[in-house]
Amino acid sequence: MSVKQEDVLKDENLITYIEEIAKDTALLHGVLMRTKETPNSPEVVSYAPFTLFPTPVPTALFHQALAVQTHFNRLVDRVSQNPAFLEETLASTIKVDNFTARLFNIYKQVQQEHRPQSIVLGLNRSDYMLDHSPYGGTSLKQIEINTIAANFGGLASRTPDVHRHILKVANLPEESNNVLDNNPAAGLARGLAKAWELYGSERAVVMFLVEDNELWKRNIPVIRRQLEDVCRTGSLDESRRLFVDGREIAIVYFRNGYMPQNYTSDKARLMMERSLAVKCPDISTHLSGTKKVQQELARRGVLERFFPDEPETVAQIRATFAGLYTLDMGEGDKTVAVALANPDQYVLKSQKEGGGNNIYDSEICEVLENLKNSTERMAYILMDKIQPVPVQNYLLRPGATLKLNSCLSELGVFGAYVRKGKDMVFNECVGHLLRTKRVAVLDNPLLV
Ligand code: ADP
Ligand code: MG
Image (cartoon, rainbow, N blue to C red):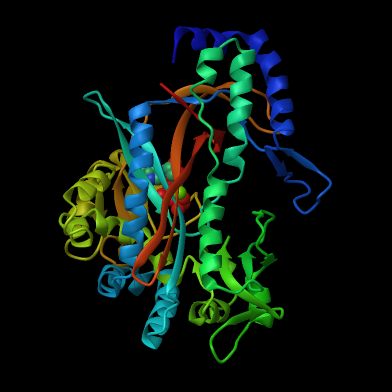
């Protein structure tokens, strides 16, 4: 951060002035969210939480993250198409993790029918943090890849204008040139549109499985339903076309379905998986995004199996991996020992998705002391803790007073791909998302 920027951060009068303008600008540009108090009211909205200033991100690392995305798209797709790998990798996990076991069970049932939909649509987001080595140097490290319900693609396109305006008001006009345009939702929709065309029926609709109120728009018919609706009214015809409420479904987009509490039963998911509808993600791609798969991919020699003739692709992907370690019985004994010895160096992760499930510091010891002799520990993996340098910023949140905070940022990169049979017909990196926390809020990279 430049001296000039640091001066701005400390100028209380200027900050108060900018705060007001920032909120107005967010409203003007549609950085909006329904409120906690009235989540179902279309009458009341507020600005979505965001940082007052964009966060400096080194240009080279930013471009590294964008450049590796089409490789990650292909990796996820190849993993999803490798039943032996998925089975072997998840064998220990599904013995003790009930939700992964349920998903795997659906996967096996669909596998046995040998009639997969030949059109695959993948919309994912690979998340990174910038690891600061104690010996100097900063590197891009992947936190995880989200293969289901990777969101915020819409709001991310609206925040660059807000930050550029704020920088101008703060008398930092040059910096405002270093906030890039970004429109992941458009790219995700292009992928979706491609898959819809390939499905080949103009009447068939895209069904968003949601419990909240996000929506993407295109000239493609869209309906929003809940898993419950599919349970009640879903059916397959003799050629396995999926119908819900009498509408033929070309694409099922899962906006939820990554948590056990999203499902009252597995019936609807199984029906959709067995159907000709394009699933985003299909069950094998969903499983390919588990933390257990991530850990196995980081094992020596595994990426090479997926890209046997592409050492550069392997190197590019591998460069983003942090250390990941199995907790399987036997091999994982070592992992338990290192985690107990240095808990502050690691993150303990179960297969749960959706935030707030990771285990840190002394709690790692509590959990592992409890589980170390039990197969229950196989539901977890261990990961090196990535250590970014905190950055000072103000976080704007409705109802909260503004104060200078020490913040950590996470860079997400959106990928979209469509495969038909053996041909990748669409494979793109479609945008990015910077989120900054104490509690995660929207942000933008300020390339430096
Ligand atoms: P989830 O599926 O819940 O999103 P993540 O793997 O993304 O799980 O972890 C949630 C959050 O925990 C991340 O957004 C990041 O802030 C933090 N986190 C995860 N892994 C690490 C890590 N290896 N080092 C440091 N922080 C991490
Ligand atoms: Mg995450």
